[in-house]
Image (cartoon, rainbow, N blue to C red; front, side, top):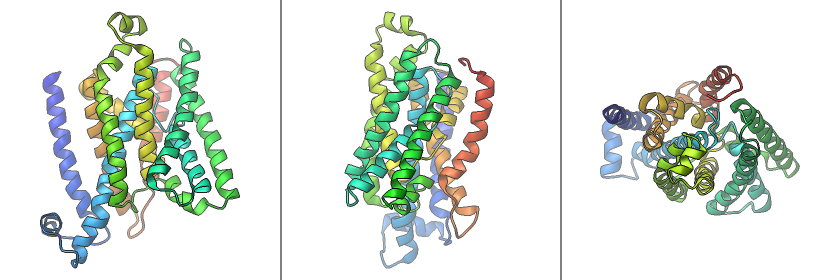
Length: 331
């Protein structure tokens, strides 16, 4: 399995590098490969092509990487701590909660900094996460995957409805539409600098608790017998999901289904050990979102399709398949 993991990781890293270059190349304006290289080696701000690479396509690529990593790792953690193959930030309403927090920030503090906006997104995501974890804890023996998915759908619907009422009443619908659609076309490097430390910290802590997440999959009694501190791990994992999902939604909006699809693909590749699942999920999520972002640019040029719509085209059929396969019980 270690050799298989090494081969998969090497292939994914190679694919990620190639797709990163292709992402910088893809766009409404044709730019030569050597111009892309020159824009990083000796940047000339008077060169329009190099300016496009450094100020538009490079921040956009980094945003796609951050969102892919954040949502994929969040989904893997949620599926691990809830024992629910249908768990993900979008399915369980966490993205909708973060969007609610963004709306509150726009209404109360229209001139708020990105850092403060992220905190509001965290707060909204925290409320949604708390509701779902409370349901999972109270019905630990009866909370089937389909039940939690339906509960998450209900939580998401409530947050979405309240958010829509607020933005219409306070006339901030146009400001929030960018995040609602889910997209990274307008991301700038200043935003990347704010978000990247949150993403890095969340991923590092996720890797540190990966062994304990694996123990949870053997059952609570076995995990306790092997020294796992269940409540501590669940709370810490929940906080990581908040950090990663909240910051990614603040950056790009509620991009759905990445956290649902990616962990299932990764488990097929590397097994059920979370010390392998988490880093490989990060790579796979990165690849998925970078690919989806390139698709948004080529479907209807020079116009762009919302990134959330492209990921939904992948995720919705997978979600239906997964719901039918689990049949309301555990995987």
